[in-house]
Length: 416
Ligand SMILES: NC(=O)c1ccc[n+]([C@@H]2O[C@H](COP(=O)([O-])OP(=O)(O)OC[C@H]3O[C@@H](n4cnc5c(N)ncnc54)[C@H](O)[C@@H]3O)[C@@H](O)[C@H]2O)c1
Image (cartoon, rainbow, N blue to C red; front, side, top):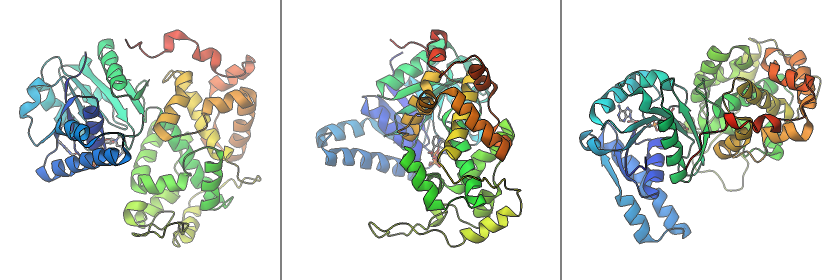
């Protein structure tokens, strides 16, 4: 189905970005929020996105005006009777999403696909609020949605193949890079990424390296920003919430460091509160390095009272935080959450990784990966328990994942 009229629910950070992307490819968009002020803010964001493209010279003013005019703000469901598709990007609360999907199901035409941008909630559960479970799908965009190419496309238990095909087609229409991900907590990217962020906390608590040193080594390794810069940008409260959720679902591999919660309790939420791991001045001096939050030292000391740290005998190396991601990515392959060949595409397009996890496995070999992860497992415990698939492949003398990736039956649905 080619989408001509769409609606976006929620005019916040994600909803306005998604509405902008939809309008950019000639789709008429209704942008709905609960209050007019929120709608205006969302429309203002989209206007700024188009203005910046005019400034960069990638659009003329007339083109930008035409595309922007295709977005109509609203606080009602009145015009939803003719939409082909809705993307919901409201608050990450199941009760909110269930209510929205119930209403959408009653108002939208029977052909309409209902997508959710949820980061972690169950697509299958959300679909049950409707009588068209076959037409409900997860389309997980990355922030900022107008720039990040990745969309994780996820079927619920009752989602039809046809719906997946339409969602994937729409991603291509929007010039996004879709990756088909089986429904699981955190989907692929957040699940993998949080093992890395959590491990950075433990390395810091051990005193292996400072915040700046860990961030710098990781950037040198090929990630767009270090874990502490990313914590501050995302918000430590949001990160605590996600990590606690992943721990509840996957157990000890996600065993949360107590440091994060201590920082949240102390009001150090990152950029939004002016301080997280770093201090964020309202008017930063250009070229001046960010200062470390002076409260951090005491918070680490407090957190250290609550955990028995392993105290690694080795100096900090980026592998300490990269290998948990590689291991978790292999768990995802083991559980058939994703095709091996899609992992690097997803991490690159969703998080801007310049180095691929599968590329590391290929370069170093799976035997090296297993030996390193096992050494950390012995030293650090369950956060590094190697996936059995890795052991099986090494036992079978398989060097990397390219053989598995060639299994065509696991490829995403073909898109015409
Ligand atoms: N922020 C991110 O980095 C990110 C990335 C990927 C996915 N997500 C997911 O996208 C969704 C939105 O996140 P966000 O960061 O844009 O949140 P946000 O708080 O910036 O925006 C949410 C908007 O939804 C509106 N809203 C709430 N209930 C509504 C309802 N019943 N009807 C219409 N509008 C309603 C709010 O008024 C608000 O404007 C969440 O599910 C989140 O998990 C967020």
